[in-house]
Length: 127
Length: 189
Image (cartoon, rainbow over all chains, first blue to last red; front, side, top):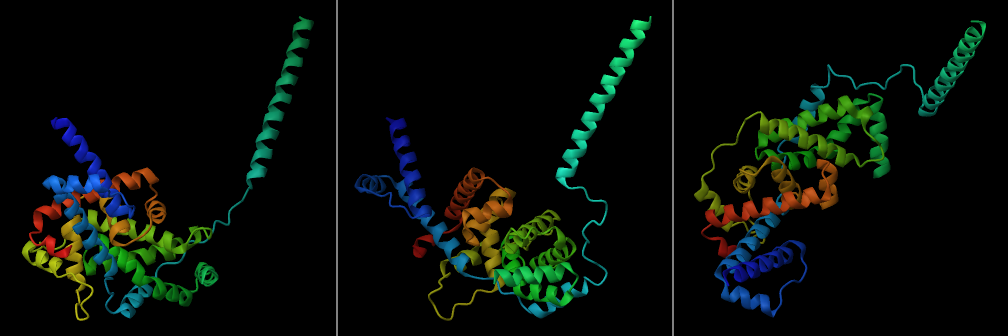
């Protein structure tokens, strides 16, 4: 019996969470009855709404930057010894060129291996 | 607008400091907001913004024009803010009673209500201190800053499921913490 009550509470709290935070309509008559009968879930619902209310109010309150001109000047002053990193001007190889070089090196290895094989064959025949 | 920022960035890449000044003026408030919500302290947030724009100047050539500039900037802000948090400088101890009272009167409908930066910082700090780093960042960016899930994923380089699970755990942590701290929470509903 206790487990059944807990399960109901868990389901109710999931619905409360969705209702409060996703603005979907999760409440029905059965859930309202549960809220009336279960002080813990009722308290959970009120707490969730309180948090939502406070965060919404904080969301609307902007922290005001006092003396923005001074901050701008401080930032600009601190740049005097810094220069933006320049893009690398070194030797640049595109991705296609890299692929071509890789393929070429594999071909060369095959050619060298084949020549080595032919040379070995000749040596064996001579022997 | 997008074309404007592309042109400005091209100018900055060529070393134009006036263009960079324009970039800073346009974006420093946004960067400050995000930094402040993570470090919860005005001076630290300013340091983070300064550090962020220095990094932008140094690394502007590595910026990929296919990405949104603000997403790239927020990534740098978050990394700098994490460094600041890890450096161990913490905000002053918060008087919980005062913050509870402020939370109860956190009402945007009143025309004369002005919450100072530090009060906002104290409240964010109160509800998010103790969260693991990832959970804190996801919670701050998603719930307090109000970014959508995709933007949070891009800024933090996290998978969707990871963002969801971290957010869920963070919200549960904050809920438990607040339910213990706030005696007057019912008045907010």
